[in-house]
Length: 118
Image (cartoon, rainbow, N blue to C red; front, top):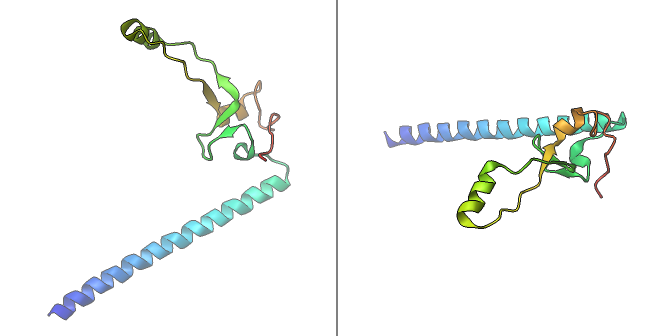
């Protein structure tokens, strides 16, 4: 009887290992495909924000150091100063790369302010 339980647990473990290996192989294949597509796009002369020296981050939410988002200080910052007496230094925020690439007065689709990372 104990051998049956051992066999069942071993079978389940092997199946889970198989699924894990299958997912790892699939992720590797998708990464290779993405790298091939990127290489083909670079051959066509396209540029990508993640390869630019002004880009902060490596994902879809990367921000561009070239274009600060000049927000006015909020009412909350003034409120904190009046309560604590400590002035907050406003943080400089930057536009997302995706917004800069679609905006005609910023980088545009062609990447006119693109500078290769060193």
